[in-house]
Length: 375
Length: 127
Image (tube, rainbow over all chains, first blue to last red; front, side, top):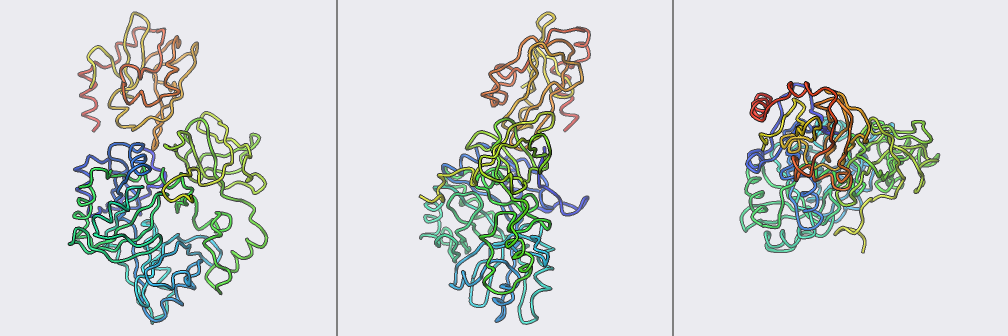
C-alpha cells in the first residue's frame, strides 16, 4: 500500500493504538501506520465510504489527533501572539476558529482549530504528527501565568460527518448540536458526557465528538447503532478533504511553505497586532508570492504526492496532494506552481511514472454542492 | 476464490490457457489487497510482453501496482472495457475483469506457473 503521509513518528518505534483499535479490527478494517498510530485506512472500501459521507453519514476515528488545553488570565494574549488568525473572532464563549501557527520565518508549524471552551480557557486541536513539536513550541511561547495541558492521551475524538449527521446527533444528544464553528457540552443517550464541536474535514456538515477515552467505544457503538452510519477510514478522510481543497499538513503546508503561497491568507489577521511570523508573512503578501498552491484536474490516472508537474516539458513543481476523486471520478491534485502558471485554465502536465498526462489548473474546492456549500 | 482451471504466478496474475493463447488477469487476492480499482494502464494489441517484466499498472485510490506478465509473447487482444469500468476487476477478477490475451512465444513457460492449490499455499506463506 502507498500511504502518502502515513509517516511514523520514529522508525522502529512501537505503534500506538487508539481506544477504538479493537472495534476497527472487529469491523474488518485494514490497519496502517499513520503518525505513529495503527489506524484504519478503510473498512469495506474507500469509494463506498466516501460516498456514504457525501450522501448519508460516516464516522471516523480521529483519536490520534492532539488536544491541548490552555488556560489562565493571560491565555488570550499569549495565544493571540502564537497563532495567525485573530482570536477576537472567538470572543464569544463556545466559538471556534481555524488558524495557522507559524515560525518567525513564516513557515507553517501546524494548522489548528482553537475553541473558546470556557472563561480564560481554550482548547486547541492539532495534527497528531505535530503533537510533540506543537506542545514544545506553545509551551515556550506561554508566560508562566498560563497553564498548558496536553490532554491527547485521555481525550478521544470521533468525527460524524454527512448530510444526515446533524439529524443523528440531535437524536443522540436529545437536542440540536451547537451551530457551525461552535462547541458545547452534551450527553449522548442521556449518559455519556461529551463535547460536540460543529467542525470537520470533509466538506459535509457534522460534528467532532470529544470524550474521555474510557467512553470512546460507547460513543462509537452508539453512532454505529444508526443503520445509515458507515465507519470510514483515513483513505476516505483524505479523498473527502482533498475534494474540498482543504490543506493537509505535511503535504500542502509545512515549515517550508508560507500561508500566502498556500492560499491560506484568509487565516491571517495582519491587523490584529504582532504575532510570530507576522513580518515575514506581511512581506510575502506585499511583494506577492512567487509560487501558489493550485488545484489540478487530471483526466487520466491518479496523481500522487511528489509527482513532477510540468509545463511545456519542463518541471515547474511537484504534486503536494493527489488522489482519485470518487465524486468527479478522475484524478485531482494540488501543487505549488509559479504564479504565472497559476491562473485557472492553465494547461500543465503531471508525470505519472511512465506516462505524462494533461492537467488543468482549476478552482478549489474541486467539488461543490455538499451539505456545507454556499447555497 | 482461486479457480482450479487457471495457473498463477508469484505476482498474483492468473492465466487461462487456450492452446497457445492465454488470457491474463489479476487474482482475487490481488484485487482485494489493492482495493477499488480506479485506473488501469494496459499495453496495445501488437505489443510484446516478456515473462517477469511489467506490462501495465493498476491503481486504486490509495495504491498502485505494476502488472507483471506471467508469460512471453504478443498481445493479441486487450480488454478495452476496463478503461471505462476499471472496477470490473474487483467485481469479476476471473471473468469480465480479464486484461490481455497473449499469443505465447514460449509455451514451456507455463510449466513454471503455480496451480490453484500451490498458489493458495503461496499466499498463506506470504501472509
